[in-house]
Image 1 (cartoon, one colour):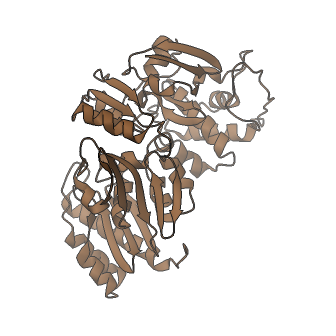
Image 2: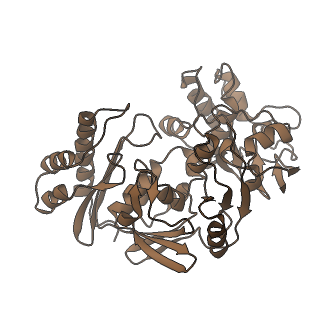
Image 3: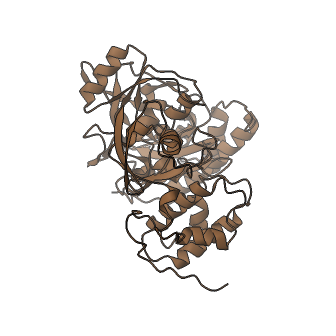
Length: 174
Length: 274
């Protein structure tokens, strides 16, 4: 089945079997291996992406379902000049990852959270991020990172990679 | 694991959906949010020949207030239930469904049709005496929620029927309490206390194969018995089963406490929703 959709602002034209999950299509057909696959049945959250700005498990959707939609993956967070997204910066600064497997999903969930609840307190962050499982960090540093990103962000978290990074985010000194 | 192959039909109307389901003769499944169906496919616990995608069927994603009823379209996402102001109990229950990325995809029609006895919306449907609008090859019919749920993951829907909307009555008062092992997990016990059409209802999720009412406890509540007594009667009345999450006694204990908490909220509610 022929489909067209937007990934991080770029057009993707694919011919896929209906049973191909969006996660597999992103990884294998689009070459965007930043979206990780953990459990492949919607439990771990590693494959969380944004579809038209709403978070979704890429393993629980078929690629044919996003025909005409706009998909944002972790690859779209970095600016065209290689500058990290403020949420990525915060994860680095706070050691919000160890092995990094869950990180793409964590970042996309965090971006959606800060987009929709820019004043989220720590308890809200914990609740909203609870759909993403991490086996390394013990979560404290992840919540720290999201809190830090919240302090540093003053612009929408998700954007087209075609547009220049519009922000000059600053973080409080350590 | 990957799903077994299937034919995919992106339906553009309810009529088309019903027609395709009829032609599939029991081998068809409706794909709405996919948050329960796709894991089942990925684990190959089901291998439908045809998936009918209803996500783009117009007219199924509205929430309408009709006097004392709130009609929720089949493809309304849980995240929208959380935010809508028309039915506060529904909003509270939807908050307990899964996680953010689940709520942004999962649908009302899908949750009701899946009929998981631990899921929140089937319990609320029974607790509010909801009526489920079902479309079939010969038109539309309304089914009481209590008659829709037959057993765990089983409904009285025919294989060529689809849910198009659910009409939840707005309770005059309500209380909701749930216990799960972890945030976002399916409930071990959900207790919902409602006043519908002048009568109190006590409805449980997670303790039987379908959402279960505790009618003896309802009578005790109507008779003005204290909350702890009503909760004790309710917990004795239900017959939960043991599994790896807990013994029968544990579940009864949790059920009594969840009932008590729901009753506290129920008692403190004024007729706020009028």
